[in-house]
Image 1: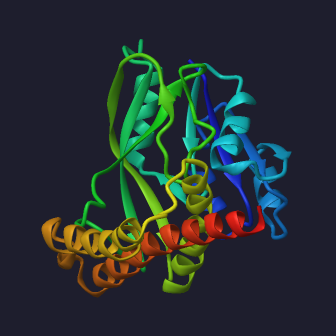
Image 2: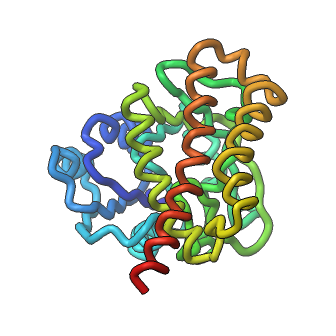
Length: 258
């Protein structure tokens, strides 16, 4: 059985070589790029990737565009900052040389944040559904950056970790959270979750972030990940506040301008 790798990119020259090195065994690499201005496309060409440059349609639409262009029996959906460990590579190869009993497979993802592999706070095992038969899985149109594909049929689990080099610095993390909170705010407005009442505003913008921090940092033992864990969970809770505050502001401005 053959394997296609589906990816979306935007200015990923720092991550892409490491990622593509880990999937050299794939029959096909499909990359849908959103007008990168760095060396992303030059690097992709050295790996004989099939490159398509398209406007960004949201994470769901962009990933579906890459999925639809794959021609192999199986599809591995990857982010540009994710690397297959040797154990995971071998697990996939072994599966494809057999008769896979399931339509889709979960993998454990290990997250490297601020230079530390996070083991607590709900960050490991960070299970992701990434390998599936062509036609068996697809992103929803409202998919967030970290959504799981909708899938048909039974699922299994692969051995080995997917190594996620997520946020090398605090600055990169904050930039990503600002962008992601904008995307999630738009989704919240579309779904009508805009904190219209004073109670829902306080709950979403203040109480939910506090509860998120306490749950991840204390209950899920995030404090065992040292200073890096403390920083991550503080600023993740701020991200939770940002997305609801931005949704409220967007809805208010629409109402004022409507």
